[in-house]
Image (cartoon, rainbow, N blue to C red; front, side):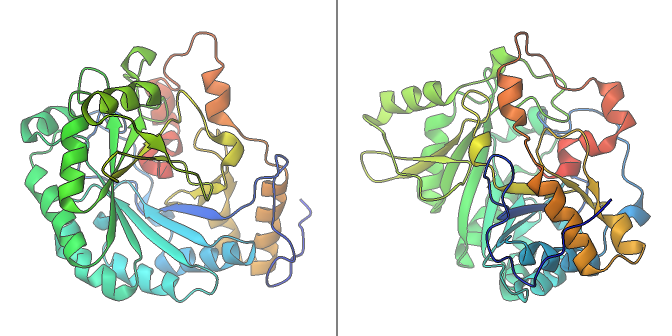
Length: 350
């Protein structure tokens, strides 16, 4: 396949066929996790990526340098649970030194955050997002098969004490935690964080998903207005997936309406799996194998050309396609996920 030769920095933004620039990269550093949330890893057993296929820190750093040449300036480290990757602060320090990367963030379930937050801050991490789906420890045991709720709260407090801006991600599921919206807003306010409510999505391992369990953005805002009064939208200054709203007292919240109101037309992000497959869409079936390119001696220019060619041809809008499906059910059957673990949410970084 021919490649596109590129200068050290693009003369103009690299855009796809829908004129969406490549600006953001989510990197899964491991497919392992220490929780079993029902919307991501609900099964008892999983097919893991071979350990020798997982990208080294040096390989990740090199790829980030190549992506930065193409216009990426935002990098988010995800998993699985990224803090299960030993020495993650080393990778953070490497990426912080990369020219062009001005936004380096981490998404974590928070269980291990308190013990690592100081080292991550010293290494140069910029922002932290913690997944917090419930404030009720017993409910978390039922939902995520983890009794370490207190560790998550400790991690949030430690991140704030270390000076990090903290966001809380809550996947809202009808009949599970939709009765906690007010409590989560109040907790976030007291913790000095901003909560973002996420509609339940039918991706990857959500093998129990149904449309009836989705609590839409409209319902979320309506429920909050019953308690707080009129809630106003804030103008969007970037292409971030969360729509931000302000309560009458000035408190801000976010809603990610990826099921009821997909934001595909403003999606500027790609995803790198832990074994080096670059995906153009969260719903993408196939991706570009960058690990092979690295380990077979490809030059930076050659790899950059392949990335540029793939992005330039991109037309993906997976959430929009799913939203238009006449009889929408789960995306993958269990057998399909086991046949290709890269389809799992915990492998492609959510």
